[in-house]
Image 1: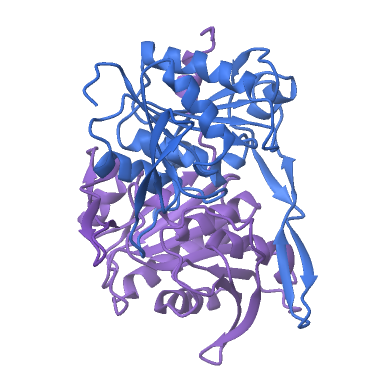
Image 2 (image 1 turned 135 degrees about the vertical axis):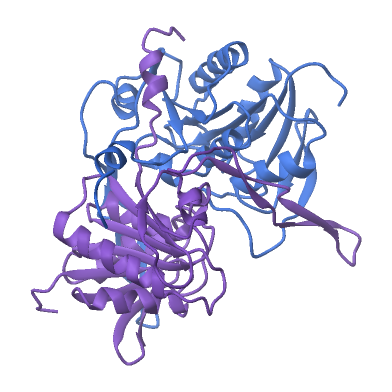
Length: 253
Length: 253
């Protein structure tokens, strides 16, 4: 790849066969060279997991006779690490992850493999963006999410991003109404498990549950989405709770 | 369990057979009733992964004819969720996770299953603490980590913790020199993969690498540890980068 166009690394957590990654690659292609390096299978809800106890493999693939990629036998964060360290011939100008089938707003940000791929890009020093569509359907209308991603990618490539900050974009399905900056809504899952009994009379549990909002305000990602807009949330991987740290300077332990 | 003593839920990411979880249960036992609910096997570096595509099972076990527990066929975050939603007969007063064999300071906080169990406790509304010893050896001297955990558990049970904040404690092996409040050091891994060729002539990669510090100051967890002290870092799961959000209020996208 001896191009002087920007190189955009495309990853996701739904795996290389998901319609969302193709949609995001199509948008990225408008801005530069595209390298798809992503998990070889569905990896939802893996959070920021990395694979340390088994080796990773990658194999080449092509989507639509158009995009070349590498399918990685690991997590989204693994894929970005391996791309950076071994697979890419030059450093990317941007890392994008998605388009996820399902919302990554509120507390979902913590569980999201899609977001973790973008966060890993930020840790490695690249401007990075996660993109999700709130519709879980594989056939969801991603047109609005693509339009939103196009605007944000253009903005990042022209303005850059501060170190340590990742952008997290969520969009409803259907046409784009607009994009609003938003903070992560405080929320959690309740009624999380459905207990069942197997044919051998042993208990097992399926994770299920619904998100409960513990927060309010027009400035939250979840309320922006509820009003039909796309939400754009700057997130940071420095998890220090500085407020408490400041108050505790004199506490003797 | 019809006790009026505090109930302390003990979890980890090294699994129920790791020496570290027994050490932490011994400390917790000094303060109240202990319930160990933890992964049934090693789950290091799983981050905040949760299990959505397979069902979870749990089975009862006992450590040293003394501590009763449930081994969960999932991640650390799964274990805390399942404990909260299904397995505990009453709500815990405190969630503790560890003692991890290996440091969870700096960027390791993001990859850590130990920390994610404590964070999940915080999300569910319980005061929560993660404890790690910087020595990866299974036979590491955990006496200092135990002493540090004892002080911090006592402090949390008497003072409480603000909502949304988890405490992350790291201690060197050997006797405790003291505990210092610290922030998460900005860091990342470099030279991450070792490429090999298998007998069938195909490439594979082992994750390896060393942590690179991108930060400086006496107030970082990594510097506190280097000086031989235990580090105590308040962390929050709200990942919003508020500084950028504030500056971007008027940006049209």
